[in-house]
Length: 237
Ligand code: SF4
Image (cartoon, rainbow, N blue to C red; front, side, top):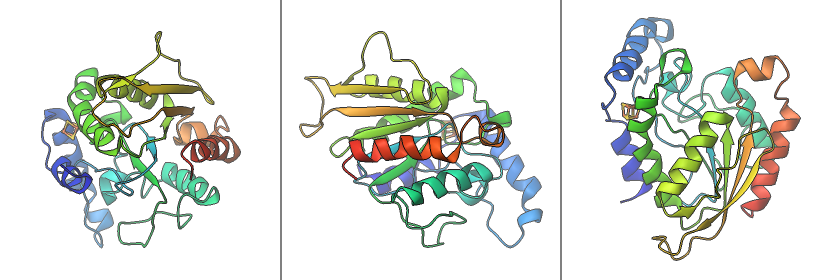
């Protein structure tokens, strides 16, 4: 199994009836408005190198962002905020991510999500969340040998990261660490961890880069940069 194989496989997933219908409906309705582009309308794979030491975990693709372009956080305002901050702290080659093929590269960093299909109102159901979790489990397992730090964007991402780490050989502290902006948890590999090279993983929490948070100033660019640079340091990037 490889990250490339996983990325390919996830794009064909049709496990959630409601989300399959929604992502395809949005693509059909909006294709005319973006006639010069291919409208993705499928599950969105992680973006970034297969040997990433830092992983950023959001919530799910946005209907007209990643669901349109096929690349995480690409093509909407949330992504503009995230990629600008990644560029400022030296983790991205460009400050903007506009479409796959725009030349953007991430350095030692991969962006992914616990739910890979755009959900209505950005709200997956608990059943959809659970159905999708094995994709993130497989991704973090493949990344485990180099993984040093995770940034969870928002409470949904944070809780997913804790569940996935607990399910894939890591010792998540009990009670589970709580989410907040600036939250930090250190997670050690269990003795039975499948990857001999796996060391501690530091998990950092940031408010999500949703427009609701960035327009209101609940999350400022400086707050995001601070979390990303702490995580980059923890990942030796
Ligand atoms: Fe498959 Fe995940 Fe999309 Fe559900 S949300 S259809 S599990 S990729």
